[in-house]
Length: 285
Image (tube, rainbow, N blue to C red):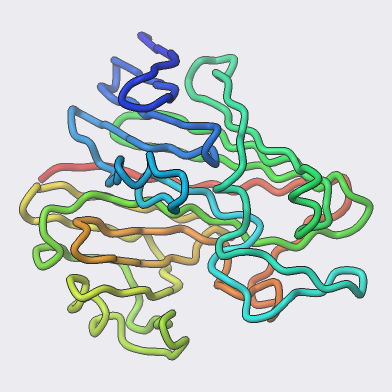
């Protein structure tokens, strides 16, 4: 198996992990939140990535696969730990912190690692280690996440990924596998999924709980991206930001505000860990 793992400087500093057997590669910038910036399969670049915005470090990233931890979305108010209130920025801090990276021993994937710091404990008062293993498979990207609680008390959290997928034209895209109802995150009201998917080109931000996998079907490029869920990472958010030619298909463990409301909030016992899985598959038709 021809696997390569090299550090490159252009067009930006990154690590490139590739597998020629599967004709696939990913590019990763561990210093910028463990960000996967590109995923190429069978010669096709599948992720949307705004390079100019990425190079402007004063701006948030638009593209790649940002990591959301210890919350997804935002909080309506401060959350309570041991009688003390803490606040977190939208989507948490993991996407803004430096991670470490290494090749897995079997060389079948790479491991990204994030450990708590003084800064992280100022807004999330826990000792933790987050390991994210990323595997290139035949036409797929498999991600396994282990989150270790090294504190002396239960650690609450939600976790998610925020992948941006390229599309040719938002009016020529179909999304399959969603349930009939969803929550419009712009007003937090229950609405029809069909009403949201009809206006992808106008901009949407909605959350749903599918029973099966979800697919983005791009009729112009003939690309199909499938998100395969695995509980508890089975909450799905769809977000578009026109005129950007992309659809975010995001697996979360729970909705925004979970640390305040308790809705789908996860907790890890002291000295324990949880493991999360998700897979993205690419097909052409």
